[in-house]
Length: 433
Image (cartoon, rainbow, N blue to C red; front, side):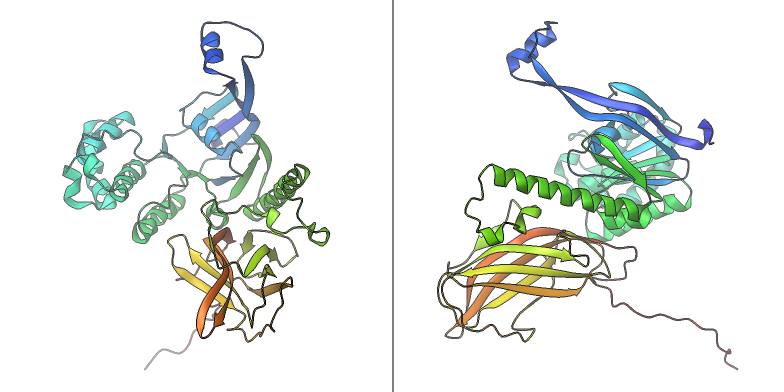
């Protein structure tokens, strides 16, 4: 059994409750000590969390929105106090949570470095010794001597990240902060992250990027509705997380059906695919109304509906289209692009040599695109459409642009957008004479 000295963080029975007041009047009455029943409801953001993190270990925390991840991090970093339980931390923490939260907009970058360093417990001499490293990492040039209010959002987070990452912490806590700045700065951030791992520092990593969780973490904890669902290897927890997402999607679909939101669904379409997926609230939808994409799906190699695909596995994209008018040779399409809006890959029935015959009003067709996932790990946006050519001009019947977020989980990323799946060998040969 491990001794307490071997733990960087120990969490015992930690819980956090919040009062959800029914009105401002109820909040005021409570503040004056009135104990009238019904003023508020208790919300359990966390309940009974037990968890140990060993020194030198990289641990990931995953879970859906509202699972309690941010609340747990704030408790560990001392931002909020738990309602119950005990927390032990052995080591100086640097937390990459709300980057730049302590910056004064009127101060220069240099002044903010001293301000933040002092808040972290460093003397001016200690900050001076780290100043060059911070400025080199931030790479904002002479803007370091300008008021922060003049910074672009990119420069602001670069400086904030540089301050947080260069104080030589014993425990690093990261919450979705490695994706700041441009791709070059992101590469620098991940390089520093890997350097910390090599140095044997303790890292607590919270991210929706399951590929990064799989690649960097020794162990993963899955939170769900404020409780620890399980902990284990990254692969096992990611698989369980995918199941949780599927179960929640099924529950949400049943709820919507029971509330009568989808009474128009035909009997044969009762197992509606799209109800399993979280649709982009900023979806760009347009077309001339000749056809409608009435359903769509992403299906993994096991036949499960999912928006998370493991790199190297086969998967299928499906779109179901109802035609309202006669159409000659309709074309079904799909496209993947990255979060920066760059088209990465895609195809359509015409490119693939699949000719769709002329269709009549009221007919429904399903297009299926099956392939191996070769994209690098990360987050992608999936679009799909039904188009065609009329008198030589491309016509969009219905397009769903940036419809779904697709997460690609990878244990190995190569250079660039996709993996060529190289078969690699190295052999020793005779030296040149």
